[in-house]
Image (tube, rainbow, N blue to C red; front, side, top):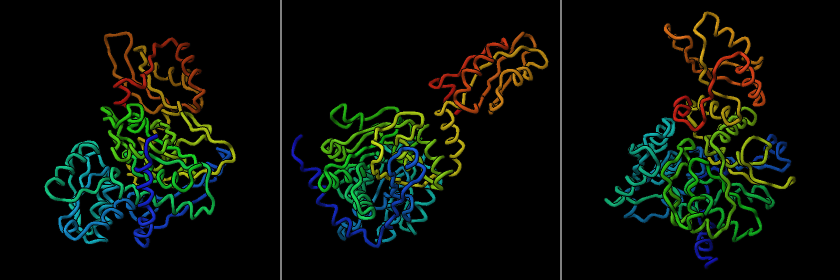
Length: 424
């Protein structure tokens, strides 16, 4: 198991961070969630970090690090790379501490996050767009740091991790009891390493579950390789947790803490985001719904196992979602639930063929959401691309049966085909 130095040293930094952040960060509420409690048979408590002034927990780590800089470092100014949330934390801290900050974000960062970074900085922040992933932005931030600015890492620094861990300390105080399980979202591993250090030191029996998005499981990859590795293809949909490579520091802490890891498909996260929005009235970004998406609600997809009657603390990490993304979120959710399918259908080139398809193939609860058809006058059949939204996933077999019975050739577009990626 090795010596406990990384975790012990990190745990020792957290009480000071708690004091440092008083009056700066909001003491966000911890709420019992009725929907998740009913669905899981366990008490599910949500720590609402989406209600921070920057709408994510990242302010905690950024301020804790920046408040410890000496005069010369403050004079030099700071630089950070961010997918959006850490940049907002750095911007807010820069304004509060009077430090100039350069924030490097990838071009894929939602406009809402970019605008908020500039607004929160109150004139102290220069925003730089670089690359298409967090890791490319990070390389540019390191280059600027080499020219004399102080780097404020989003996760790979003990001061950042200690600041981020304060949310768990706070949540335990608010609960007034020690929960059985803590479920934590993972991107680069700052929050989970800091939280694990505090939990292992103070409440070693608490079960720690870290949740990664399926499209960017950088911690799982590092654990199996025995060292941090770079993932070549990642899905940046969960922008707040889409990291190619876990930090060296955070990896050491996570490995030492021996936490449980689970991976959740992006579509499952979308379903949870929609449930949070429509039932709980909580607006989260994908990374904010990552932890609760893993709970055993009986829904589609991989889930963690939690004994009924357990008391569970779940971190809602952020709520910086761009409203323009909701169409994609609904689409990904429907596909994950098995309620959205695309077909290439060979239509007979005769009048009324489409009506036949609609009348004899679609079920009463089914709907056509996409239709593209090119008439070919010199052929007997013409291809059409048809998107169908099913009333329930169980209607799928009946749909296939009816397509077969009406005598049309149909081929389903596979989820993993480039064509499907284009459609969604």
